[in-house]
View (cartoon, rainbow, N blue to C red):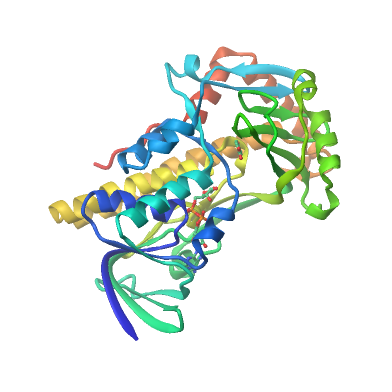
Length: 403
Ligand code: APR
Ligand code: PHB
């Protein structure tokens, strides 16, 4: 068994693990990252692409904002189509100047991987049997296998950045954690295509046939989604069928602009709201998808991971600079306050925009629930205060500073 040691051991090289590693490195704190799959595999996972302003600032603070600032698109607003009637959510005007940036998660991950490699920081890709031990003691460690050899990694702290299916959350004894979950009765079928997007801004479409989203990655790359039954299989959806259905759900002006082409990626994702409380156990801290999942309707998944990272990196910096270990107790309460807000917003947007016909929800028939949600959406879109409520949360609430 080979023995290694570091200050902060990070499990998972997704955006959470890589961003945390980079920010800690900037503060002179040493990390080792253990990742189950290859770097190429991580980059092959297509995820969302809307970054809150707070996130872009954090990426710049980490010293990896250059390409994001060059290639990312600043979006000053987005559109909500209610069965073809469009309302512009003018983020900039409604929030006193805030905007979001459209830049794929894959690109952020690529930039963070490049920065980690350039700084010669250690990442073990294809590490297997990763297992944290003694996390509730002062000497936690992780065992893992790499290229046929067994390793022990000693660390002061462990950051569980290993996503929803990771090992870290399960390391917290079951009787000490509470998991809250809602699984939605539909999924999103996503298509990426190298075709010019229908619109410069995103269009969230509520439609009687089901929700649709017109998103983008650049002037030449589109990302579209359709609400589909969870039982649907990707194979059931030819490109032609996808484009036809999307066209029906888009507002007429956008449908007229739709340029179709071959899909370069097509997948179905289930929709889930999930929170694990607390997000800390001894010297183990859960970060990002390891602790919480949101449905993608509010574009909050990656952004909530970023606020966890911001909080943890500030607290760990204080530990190493000032020896103040007590401050770490603030991590879970601070992170969870923002997480629950993002959960509530994503759940609310999902409820307002999807079609629940034929499904039971909140103890009532989908048809009845839909009436409440039709009215809710109508009210919020037709009141400036309502649009402000949507805009304020879409651009992201400020990060809470530790005491
Ligand atoms: N050992 C090592 N690595 C693991 C293990 C394990 N047992 N289990 C999972 N991993 C790795 C995964 O392979 C993955 O690369 O952890 C990483 C987790 O990355 P993500 O799932 O992308 O999660 P996170 O980094 O928290 O990213 C934030 O929020 O809503 C989403 O789309 C958003 O994916 C984004 C996420
Ligand atoms: C995306 O571009 O993939 C995307 C954008 C906004 C969302 C969800 C996904 O709300």
